Amino acid sequence: MSAEKTDSKGEPASAAAPSDFIRDIVAQHVAEQRYPKIVTRFPPEPNGYLHIGHAKSICLNFGIARENHGQCNLRMDDTNPTKEDVEYVESIMADVHWLIDGWADHCLGFKPKGTHPAASIRDGKTDFFLAPIPATSPNAEPFFASDYFDALYEFALVLIRKGKAYVCDLTPEETEAYRGAPDKPGKESPFRNRSVEENLDLFARMKAGEFPNGARTLRAKIDMASPNIWLRDPLLYRIRHTPHHHAGDKWCLYPLYDYAHCLSDYIEGVTHSICTLEFEVHRPLYDWILESLDLPRPLPHQYEFAKFIPSYMVVSKRRLIQLVQDGAVTGWNDPRMPTISGFRRRGVPARAIRTFVQNLGVTKYESLTDIAVLEHAIRDELNGTAQRRLGVLRPLKLVLTNIPAGESVPCTAINDPQSETPTTRQIALTREVFIETDDFAEVPPPKYFRLKPGGEVRLKYACIIKCDEIIKDTSGRITELRCTADLTTRTGQPNADRKVKGTIHWVSASACIDAEVRLYDRLFTVPEPAAEDDFKKHLNPHSLEVVTAKLEPSLATAKVEGRFQFERLGYFTVDAEDSAPGKLVFNRTITLKDTWKA
Image (cartoon, rainbow, N blue to C red; front, side, top):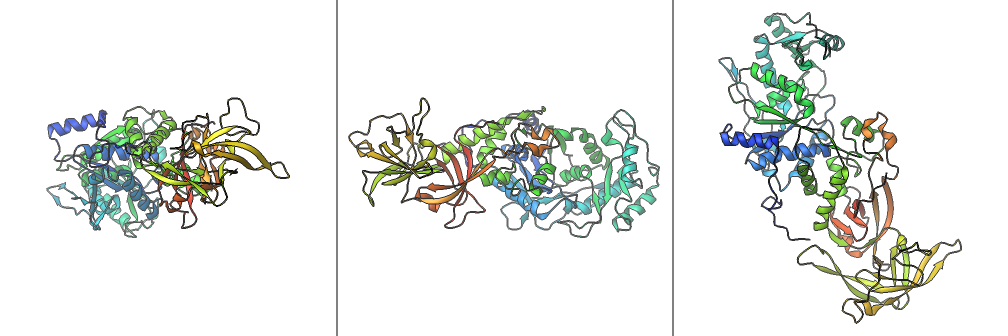
């Protein structure tokens, strides 16, 4: 491993600060001293696990906070109780902590546990603000939009009193029909001109649970002829008699995302609300709601960037849920899934993901990103950090006939060849060893430099051997090879410099351990599986192969999520869920080279 200099947060000290159009805007605001502190936020809805696409938003929002000595709030935008769950909240927290740990966790804004903003309405103006506390405090928890339900309700009352919101009795189907089309103006609801008093009365009764689901909504009164369809009297509240995972059964009236999002930003003192491009058309509504309330503090502003679209993956939550529910994968954290928890279980380092998404840049143009670029970042990171070990995935027994049974020859192996000061360990060359079945060919093709009848190869860290005899069973299957070891070709011996063209790995048959090894590959066989409704027809039937491998004994004490390079094979990690003492399970993180073929 190279002795790379890092800063106090574990990042390369020589790395240039990222530059993009959003950071340029923030830099200008900092120079103007427009805000006392830069505050961003990462606001996922807890209706699924985070995926690799979210990593770009996490690194952007936390990165801007980190670079400007600011704060990034982790907020659950939990306004839809029918799809959200505590499981997703917990998974999001774990994934964010893992991804930013040691890099930007000092920027993570949390709130005192159980606190809610209190409304104070003075002179027609409503002011809210939550003062965050360090995430390391035992009394800290992430922000929740549902903690603001009381405040959001008070804001809605202000809009009604100003004549800017009304209760509508149209059904969902009628509301959609009245909205019109992008090239056709909408039609005003027959309930649009209700009096303020009637709207206040109906809205209070909606909150009290008097009406069934879908009977009434609260809508903003904007412009049914607007060319921006999101300004055609959008819904602000809907009735849903469903308990909430965080707020309990207090509410049957829930705010819509567009209404809750901008006000949650305001309540938390967010300065730069950074979203993906699909929310660009929502920005006028974001601004309209905030400006309609005459709020006393500087308002947050929304900025949009292009999301990350990876090849050979689907990142739609709907389709990820389908993969889980249909049993195409073992769960949200299946190492073949594009979820952050799947990448973590597969052994991908958090810094590799951060490096990858930061190198993607931040633009206004969406495009498909070749996942090979991410795989390169993973290999590059693991090459410098993973300890080297020997393992054989598909063992073939080899007998070194000139080494007596019960005896062994000590050999020195290198743990970290990329380091400026490599360390070593001792391994034992014994009479019987295992090599990879693919490292022997009875009838070799041209330019084959591995073991063959009468041929020589070097056993890595040991010596040169020569194949003398092939032993087969009655069916003709090769059961073992008998070879001679030239022990004078070991390091420090007279013929250590003798050259042969092939070097292969091995493990001692008498000093090795068995382990289940899961060989993961890409989940889909085409670059854009999401382009078709029947995306599952492109599932890769070879995305997982399970083998019983022979590993060198030092791996018996490998820790969960420990990362290793099995020499000549790839990078592997100890599985965090299924490994147990005496029953090791390793997941292949990635091969040493890109050998993918669709």
